[in-house]
Image (tube, rainbow, N blue to C red):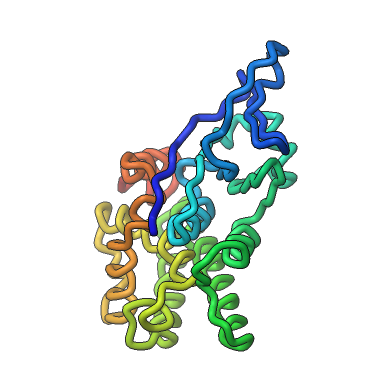
Length: 255
């Protein structure tokens, strides 16, 4: 089902905006130039954002072609802030209508395009949503881990990561995915979480996954999934390493 998507760098210099007609308008130059979009769906992105990866994975799982436009969050274009009140990625543009917040985007895509990635039963669906929130909490802890200024603080956050992974281990069944044989939105949001550890493992053996066979197998299964692999640029590992080196943190001194 996976459909190719294209990456386009979006800058403030040409102030490109998507309008409701589905045309890409060069708004600032006043030259009247328009470029017809190849797809009515655009994912406004940042090259490292794990929340963007969630949306990209869901789009790919559903076979929906889309254009991906990367923005520099350190120098946010004014047009981007018009679409994203919080100044964060991702933003999904559908025929000019903007949707922000990754969980909302994933839910919209699941309700709009098949096949459904959420369970049909209300209780099962609610539990899946709860574990999606859990993944966001784990991402926050990962952020605290790589931002910790001193080794002691990094170790504290590392223990918290380990605790969260132990909770996951207790929740998982026989696999290969979160809820058995079917790929779900929970899998889509955890794929980007586990990707961090590919780079962490290359820095040092933090032993996060020791004696956690279910989580380890799930991580490996997601890493092989085309939608998960293709949710980032080929240069992602080195881009993440560069990002970590610049943190002025305990981890940055190891990278």
